[in-house]
Image 1 (cartoon, rainbow, N blue to C red):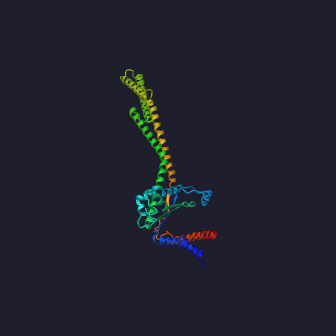
Image 2 (cartoon, rainbow, N blue to C red):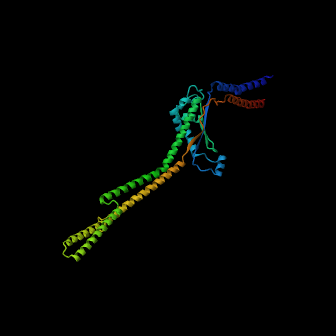
Image 3 (tube, rainbow, N blue to C red):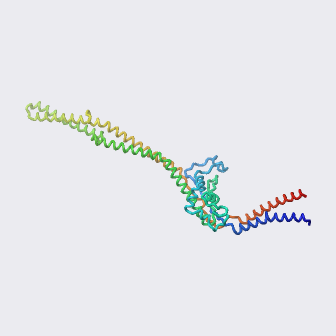
Length: 370
């Protein structure tokens, strides 16, 4: 074999070692001895509204083709799980940076290790986004929560905590929606209650000042009293006439005359109390009726406001959302990542492709020079 050809194959062997053998050995060493096991806890849940309307045929078709959006509740939970607020709560409750920064995790994947040397909150958020995902199936609105960690229990604990935070978010959204829906009507009820109270106090003060409790019954009693006095007055007048006609010198005539005069005065006095005087029942009843009417109107407004409030509360209840677990967070018993054999084989295959391309290029350049 000629010397140039020998040098060519030598170059090929060196190239093969650099592009195939060395990367494959490094990958086998890393995935076989260094890379930490990654455990994945999965859960699925559904955000739904029991009072939601039936889906029309067109909407159902859009859902099956993926053109219809997911429910607002599912999107809200998805955004929250991927937010800094959720990370802050996890950091407070589970010390997330400590879990992902454990010295038992290989330095390439550990938070604070070689790939993630910066342990700031911003870097922790980026790391967290790579370990937690929440995907929504647009056709069924079922959310799939996937949490990766380096121990089975850590993956399970983080998944459970995220679901609890999602449930809290739904509860807060329901509470806020209910408060927004009834706030206006609560104000109306409070205002109507104040008007009823003011009307009752005004009527009570007028009753105390005027001595008039209820004009109708009091006027009726006054009329009955006047009627009785008139009957007695007529009887006394008749007796007086008979006495004067039969016994003109009867000493009872003077007595009967005084009785008739007294009854006439009493009738005049009681009639004045009923009407014809600034302090009569008729004069006082106008103001009383006005105050009573104000009270009636205020009570009707209160009844309407209470009915509107009740209706608003019913409508708010119809808008309530609920989080229903489809499958509870799993406790992984087998590491799903990394795919050690597959990743090593992928490195070998990629290196082999690179080696083949470079070999062709080198051979072409060699032939061009020859």
